[in-house]
Amino acid sequence: MDKLLQDLRYAIRSLWHQPSFALTAILTLETPDLFETHRLSDEEISNMSDNILLLRLTRAQPMERTMSIIKTRNSAHDHSERILRITSHGVAVDEATRPRAN
Image (cartoon, rainbow, N blue to C red; front, side, top):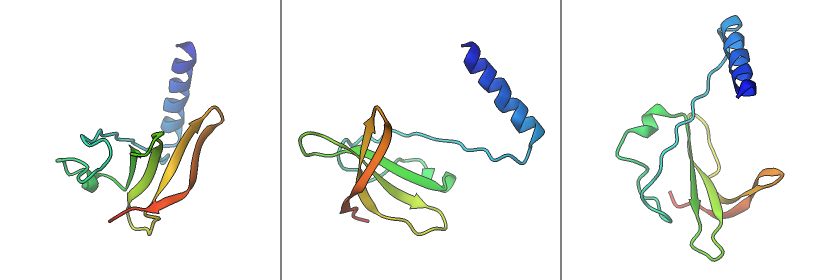
């Protein structure tokens, strides 16, 4: 807990001394569909965000985590769905498995 408070104090001091420092907010949202996502939410989440990543599971056995980029504001992006692996060495994103239907 002391380490957390120390890190928090450091972050606040850094922001105070460098007010032009950028701030990133991460909003997470659970979708009701397990495998297919037809709509992200009933809220206007796309208007509030610059980037949207979709994390979901494959239907194939064994189930695997996948990641695809839904939106990147003012930039072209890869629409492919990729396997996402969380290992003891960190996060790894494999080559594209299939193009995502738009």
